Each structure stands twice: as C-alpha cells, then as structure tokens.
Length: 328
Image (cartoon, rainbow, N blue to C red; front, side, top):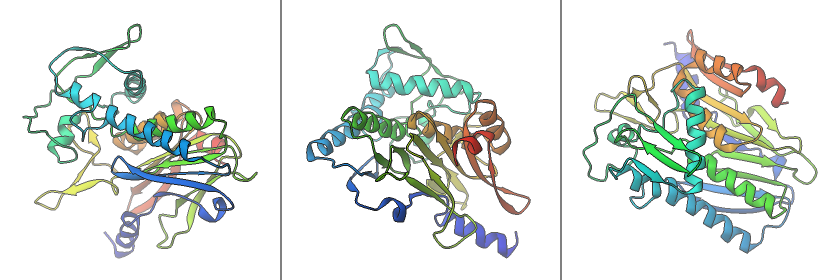
C-alpha cells in the first residue's frame, strides 16, 4: 500500500462520510431540541416553534422504542423474546412493524440482511451476553402472522435490531411532528436523518464529507427541495473492535460466514423517499453484500445508493441509477 493511499484511508477512518448537518445552510432562525438515547445523541431542528410538551412526547417515543428494541436492556421486549424458549409470541404493533420491514429487506437482499445474528454480535462484544451460553444456529430465520400480529421463532437465535431501531425511531418522531402540524423539520438520531418541508422557505441541506479531503468540505450536498427524504449511512469506521492479533472485528456480520464482513466497501449512504426505517436497514444490508451485489440490488429495486469503496489501490465513489433521480 502506498503512502498516498494510506493517508487517504486514515483521513477516511478519522471521520469522513459521517453524515452531518450543513449548519451554515440550516441555521437561520430555527428552533432546536436535543437529547441522548441508544448510546448516541439526537437533535431536532425546525423553522417552527417546538413546545416543551412536544419535547416530552418525543422523548417518550424514543424511550418507548428503546424498551422495545434494545439488546442492552434485559427488560426490553426483544430481549425478553431472545431469552425465552417459547416458539410463538404476540408482539407489540411497533415490534411487528420493525420485524415486517426487516423481513422485507431480508428477502430483497437475498438474506444478506439478517436480524437473527444477535448471539454472534454479543459474542463479539457488541452487546451484552447476560451471562448466557450463546450458541448460534446457522441459516435460521423467523415468520410473522399478519392476522394476529404474532411472531414465530424458528430457532433459539437472538434478534439484533441495532441496524433498524434508530431509523424506526426517526420515522416515528417524524410522523408525530406531521400529526402535530410541525411540517418543517430535520431529525437526526445518531446519523439516521429525516428532512421534511422547508427551512425558512429554503430546502434543508445535509452534507456528506469529502473522503479525499482532510478538511470538512462536503463532496455531496443533499437538498430535499421541500420534500421528505430519509438518509442513512453505514460503515465499519463507526463501530469496530480489534482482536488480540490486531485484526479488525466489525459489528456487521456476513450471515453466510458468520464472521465480520471483509469487503471493499468503506461507507454506504442510502437516501429513501418514504421511510427512515428502510433507509437504516438497507444501509446495513448493502454494507454486508459487497459493492457489486449492493449496486446491482439497488439498481434492480430503484434505491438511491452511494458507495465509497477501495479498489485497485484507489478510493472511488459510485452511485446507483436512482441516486441521480432523487439527489439533485
């Protein structure tokens, strides 16, 4: 590896492709509320006043989803299911919605999106084991019954909803704000973003940092032009560990090998026209696939995708066809 490429990769790992708010564009007479959850922070900006009662309701939405989907809380709904030997469960409507979207993306991604790898993730140290002996059974999934909103577990594998829960929370906060007629807002929970309406009659702007620059200039500025857009990113520069041999252990697992992914993708960005939940989960699915299959899948399913990849000792940015239609 030459020194020039190494310096670019160091710059990348140091924080490039982190989705960030283009503050200069968005910071004219806006109201802001913020907090912390899911081991990260959240921010909501709006050109309309957000009262304290809305902040309380938003905090409750975020907290409620945490108590549904968290692998860190032994009393969460998904942890109770993980630690129970029952086969059938009647689940909350929110959990059923999350599982339904996960199942849809599992099918679209040819199984590369798999939320039943929780034991693998826990064994790698990315979530608690709760003192359990974690033996994962390969090639198992789950079934859902739409009629009675029930779940059928096909093995004792654990669910891990970390790749979809933040996106779902962003979507639920957005839907609350729309219901309350707060139409113009930007929601950011740990890098999962929705932009809706306008910012003082201008579009919201979200920048994706230039991977070839060590300064904070953006290579791509995404503007919503008064419409809804959900933006999600995935990349192993965010969440990884090193083993005793210094090898990189990532949170994203290849469901075929049951090991941390090893491919040429450095970062994934997905822009979705209707759902932050889909955007969040798609970004993980594409990260697990590898660049060629990810791009083919995005094009075949009309998904706006941007990949930053390492190829032939170079760092390249490639886009799906939908990206050019959606991101203008």
